[in-house]
Image 1 (cartoon, rainbow, N blue to C red):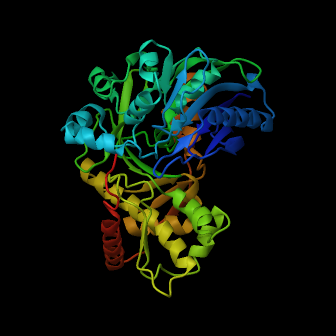
Image 2: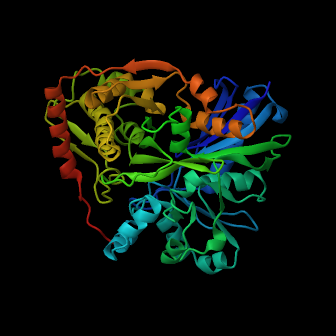
Image 3: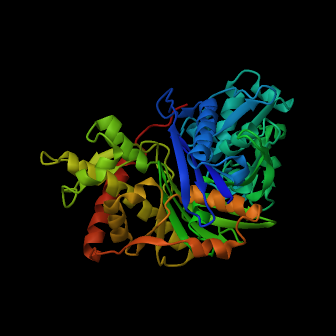
Length: 496
């Protein structure tokens, strides 16, 4: 019996999961890699470590499942988006560490673009706000700061890619340099209307077209890898959040999912028409299948699960991330404490690169449990802010929120999320929806699954959280959050 292998390359770890035809997990493997922080606000990865850990986990997942290459019908890839790699086409060696999506070093470069009055034009073409989050200014930074890089790029010696491109390049031994439309739409170099790289934006950031990958659909055979003892087609690519939207079977316009990972990412399927946001959300490609591109509205929150890592590594009030729920559950509320986790600035709908983390309302009676609870509630408050903006843009009232990602296993967080939103929060049986989405896209390309209807029929509910909070209590919570949020905004001064 054939299976699909999904490679899920995340911000803190590389994972590989083998799925069967029912969409169930057969085996998985995971390996963390280093987070590099050269300066405050800078976040880097060693792209060679990303590849090494991804290759290791893929080999391990196949071995654990008791399979060989002949049992794998296709490989699907999903990845942390925006993270930028530039490498030498001949040697395959990166010329600089990968600059991660969380990295804020290009915030002032983005300010300069805004000061020149270019934000509206960039938004109209790309669907994105001008922010250090996206790949364009990261790539420009590498080209400017690595000696000779721009000239080498023009000469065709260097390749640029988001992590999906880097993985495909390595899987195929440098034969294939591609990305899919969902990843391309996160670079601030891709035109949503034309569905290709935009010459005007490339000129604006002085990025040579010669270094860019070809933009392909999210579900097709891009090439083969022979690294696992036989030829396996690589047949699906999508950015992690778009893959999760597909894995959650949110294939109809108006359906919404939120992924609780390192960051938090809410996407609403808007169908074949891109909706221009009036509320600081992003318009992005959901996926391209065949010649049909579908779009989504997205709210990106930079810090979600990472706040729990900070409680563990920074404050030391928990020994492992799994302890946060039981610690937070020791108290019925936060006792007026609010934690705004703006450790890397604020994403949607605020887009404030100079906001910083803040804890407010602390008294002598504040305990570690109150802080743990405030950290979890800080995630939920950010999600609620994004959802309100999304409802306003799409002019619809949400019926339910489908959730996934590591932190959705936290029942206390999910219940508070439902209480804040006033709608059911629905957790599926298979919460590995990011990897599952990549598997589905790859499987569709090779006929492993017949169509989207077959995929949607596989989606099942694990638990439905229903709101029990009174509206007056909800308003009180929201007022406290807004007060704390305002204090966290524009905390840092802009500097070069």
